[in-house]
Picture 1: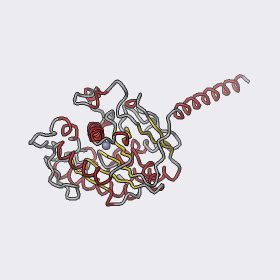
Picture 2: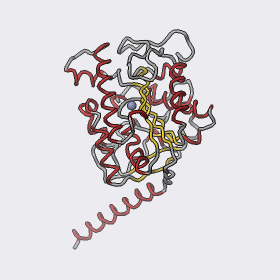
Picture 3: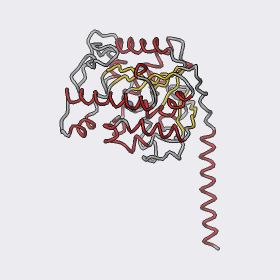
Length: 327
Ligand SMILES: [Zn+2]
């Protein structure tokens, strides 16, 4: 009896914990329904972010008949671990990283195809991986373009990019992103939060917030986090039965939730795994973003902590780099 009583206590405690977790999730309001007349724009710093952040939302939007476009700000040409694994070389620079980026663009096209985003609504800008924060903060209007220490390039080299030959400056990047916004005329924009710990994500969030605010369209923005703080999302595993939790970096933000059905979860998983070179290095981390909910915030940063939106170093940038900021 005593053993059975203890078991009942354990079960009751687990049920109470689960109920509390559910009500915490339930307290997050729903993202507004996407309708056939909507035009979504997903702003992805790197190939794979579009699927990790928003694969389920993209699938639901397409099923609702909405138009979906994706713009990739970089092509992922600064990720040495990835290049080392794929090309089986210890030191990969220059041409090797440019070749990797071309592979990653092909994989991004495949992922977008699985999400039924047509080729004419896929935009590659080709700016430097690991270089967006300096462009946005320090090399915005200067005549001297930023030079990537990974590839050695200081201009967009990919012929499939929107404006090949553009200088690595904030001004050229702003011009290209504005061209995409003018062409898509989005009713809903999904951008990384400046709270995301990857510097490219932070920078793209700052730029998106700045551009949409100037256009008077900031209300159309929703922010997502992929690098949310050490150990998140836990567990580092494919657990589509679980809801996504609010990232440590995203506490205090105004989150909204989208519930994914089995069909959207299956498509999202396929899209994530279409990024074969990334999945070879960090498949489990990537799949930990395939959960039965996706979270988007109405606000770019928590109230009272606007530092990540500005030019001053965000507090996490003062910390040593972790392996988390790798993709
Ligand atoms: Zn990324």
